[in-house]
Amino acid sequence: MTAHSTAFPAPDPVNPSSVEHGSAPGAVASSGAPHRVDSEVGPLRTVLLHRPGAELKRLTPRNNDQLLFDGIPWVDRAQAEHDAFAAVLRARGVEVLLLSDLLVETLADSRARTAGVHSAVDERRLGIDLADALRSHLATASAEELAVALTAGMTFEELPAAEGASLVRRMHHPHDFAVDPLPNLMFTRDSSVWVGDRVAITSLAMPARRRETALTDIIYAYHPRFHSAGRAYGAHSAPVEGGDVLLLAPGVLAIGVGERTTPAGAESFARSAFADGLAHTVLAVPIVQERATMHLDTVCTMVDRDAVVMYPAVRDTLSAYPLRPDGSGGVLVDGPEPFLSAAAEAMGIERLRVIDTGLDPVTAEREQWDDGNNTLAVAPGVVVAYERNVVTNAKLADAGIEVLRISGSELGSGRGGPRCMSCPVDRAPLVG
Ligand SMILES: NC(=[NH2+])NCCC[C@H](N)C(=O)O
Image 1 (tube, protein in one colour):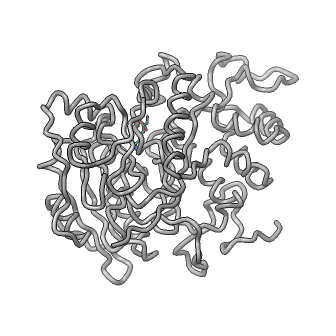
Image 2 (cartoon, rainbow, N blue to C red):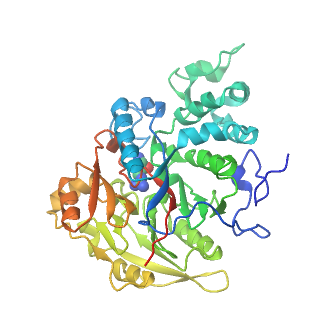
Image 3 (cartoon, rainbow, N blue to C red):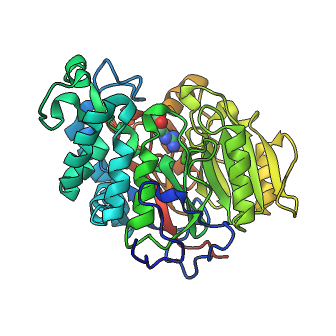
């Protein structure tokens, strides 16, 4: 293997995250990294989005539940809505990186191709012969074709024609997936998360989403822009999804624990953040384990340096277990205590304000379901929100928050709002 110009040892092409990044013994800390995220609200400079594509066309009434969509989106309209979302961000001076572009550029590297093909070809599903045939087919595909296969998947009828009879091919329905599509890739928040100058490839809980991190992993390992980025957390550790991770203030993280992130995930993420000097306090926040509240960011997001928008039904009950380093590699656990006061204390502020949305419980429940609390801050006091959540948005505006409204009639069918659909890669520091 040729030398790789990174601060870290060259990854194993089949499993890039096998390289111990970050806190690994002997690893060199990245310095002068061009990307850094220390808060939820610092002026957004660079963000990773995924423009939904052919993978959404795989959704049918038979597979949408399993693929974590609540309906069948009208794909052209979803793309138009997504383009408008990206345009709002660009108009605010944000550099928008699109995952498919990065993936195609990354696949120019032969090690990335090897890793990509390896992640897609499941010998247990295809059997040895078909797996071999698919590997050789994908190995000669262009970077663009390979990127489409990796994101939209492949059906058995789309597999390359082959000599001889394969039982697997003959017994599968032509529309069965030989490579699963990744319709949730547009929720870039969940498959990687930046903390300080390091990126964590998360560990996704739901089978329908697990392969997404193979793609973020190879992008961050091999794309020229990112290959020297330091890593945090181990990609194959206990489940942690980015939608559960909130950077309340520099050094202070809140991690939701519920349907997706497990207690073990929160604890090991905290341990790794402490070891890397990325946090001094992590608040593990229990959330109800159901679809409506799959991530912490479905009930609470930051809209200003000292303010959150929060689903009223959880406001008085949300609690937190504060975790702190014990000084010798372990984790001290406190609480549980009320989330708002625990957060304020860790952030070193008197009070964490909750924007009073004062919604009646039925409207609150409807707008929570439609991601009314899932806002993306582009600067302190300036957030992107779905326009359909009329009442929540009006209350935010009354409280002095500037709300950039986008339409999400089709995008919303995957149950994710502006925060879920964005992975901040660089935010300016909060000053003063
Ligand atoms: N950070 C978030 N809230 N992401 C929403 C993800 C939605 C996606 N359909 C899922 O179920 O996984």
